[in-house]
Amino acid sequence: MRCPHCNSLNTQVKDSRPTEDETAIRRRRVCLDCSRRFTTFERVQLKELGVLKRSGKRIPFDRNKLERSVEIAVRKRPVSPEQIDEIVSSVVRRMEGFGESDVPSSVIGGYVMEELKAVDDVAYVRFASVYKDFREARDFEAALAEIADRGPPAKP
Image 1: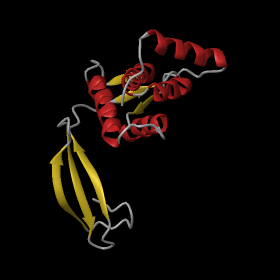
Image 2: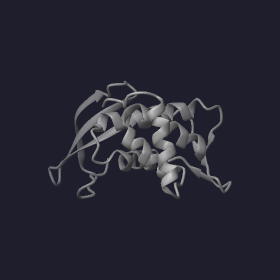
Image 3: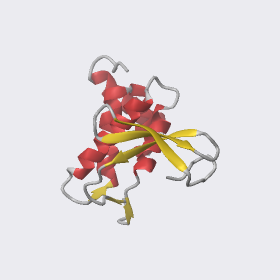
Image 4: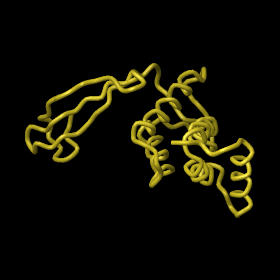
């Protein structure tokens, strides 16, 4: 494993343990050259997933890209890194159960919105504003009305 700090290949595993949902192995590593520590995750990949974009183009699925999108939506919100990982893992499991190896981006976005709605209302609206391409205040009002219709806000 290459060190993300100095790019050295001289790294060592110090600790391994399963994640809370037991879908991955979390490994703490140390670089023997720069002595810095970092964490990696090992996950089972059942099949090679692809994303069908609205344009019809197929691109390979990138878990890191999905994770970055969720991180942007939850930025400065009371959502832990473990919750982010649970959201991403849940979306990936749902994609794997979709039945096809190529999943439309609209389906993936819907999965993410469902997960975020259950965790944090503000993160949900942030993600929805990009995913649904909000153009005016009325779009935000509709999303907020949808949240208000379901009862009290979600607790972190």
